[in-house]
Each structure stands twice: as C-alpha cells, then as structure tokens.
Image 1 (cartoon, rainbow, N blue to C red):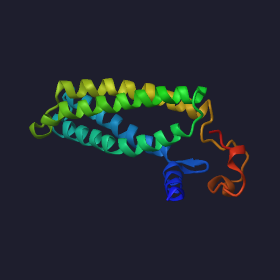
Image 2: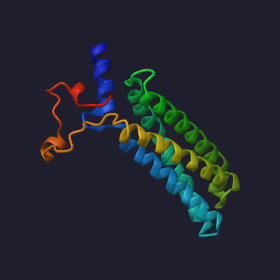
Image 3: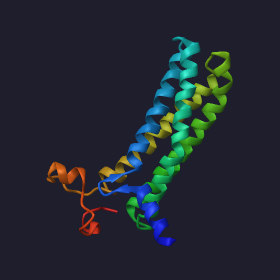
Image 4: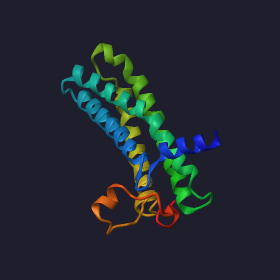
Amino acid sequence: MEEHVSRLIALARGFPGHPSHPPLTDVSIGAYTVGTALLVLAALGVDEPSLSRAGLLAISGGLLMAAPTALTGLLDWLAMTAGSSVRRIATYHLTIMVGATLVFALAWLLQRPGYHAGDVRAGGWIAALIAEGLLTAGGYLGGTVVFVHGHRVLGEAQAAPERALHPSTERPLSSTIHE
C-alpha cells in the first residue's frame, strides 16, 4: 500500500525534468490575470455586461485550478530540505499564493451578484487587482525557487533533444536534480 501511495505522489509531482506544478501555475495565473483585466475593462465601461460576466468566469477557472496547483506545489515543498534557503523562499511563495487565492475567492464573491445583473462590482475588480499584486509577488518568489535555486531542474543544458524530451530515470537522479 505504501508503495502505491509513493507512486501516486511521484506521478502527481511529475517526471524528471517535467514537474507538474509549473504548467498548472500557468493555467491559474493566466485565468486570474485575464479575469482581472476583464473586470477592470468592464469597470472602465468597455462592454460592461459581457466583460463583467467573462471576468467572473475566468476567475472561476483560476479558482478551480487552485487545488491541483496547490497540491503539486505542496508535494514539491514537502520534498525540500527543511530549513534550507530554497524551502524558506518556497514557504513565502506558498503563503503569498494562498493569500492571493483567498483574495481572488473574495473577488469572486463580491463580483458574483454582478453576473446576473450584467455589471461589474467595485469590490470585485478592486479585490481582483489586489489579488493580482499578490499573485505577481508570489510568482516572483516561485521563479526564484526554480531559476535561482534550480529546484526540480535537471541542469543538462547540452542534452540532445531526445534526451531532453524524455530524461532517463535509469541513472540516479539525485546527482542531477536539484531538490
């Protein structure tokens, strides 16, 4: 049973050189950013009925993707060495991103009545802008985890394309993956 759980966790984390968390963050961040932009445009009077609804739907998509994105990030965080510099930064990243998600959830709640009314609510677009600021800060820290600390990076810049697309799991990955 324990081996099955370990395999499931490994599957959720992704494969060598191809972790699951980064592409999921792209979906969440994209949905949140589009939703925020649409709400702001609606607040400026650009096709308010359509854009206010589309903005809420986009933020809804970001919120739906928040759970798998957070889960894969948490699994990566748990694999980091406790007390390490990378885990400390990842902890700040995690905290800010959870905060951003909560503020987007608040934006959704504040904008929800405007969906049927066909208007943008001030609380909705303002909360979304605040959440977008948190999202930017959290994304910056997430980038630091990957691009400065090299977390989950194989570090094989000269790998042939076929090797890069399908990294081998036959050799010990601990020598090449920066966990």
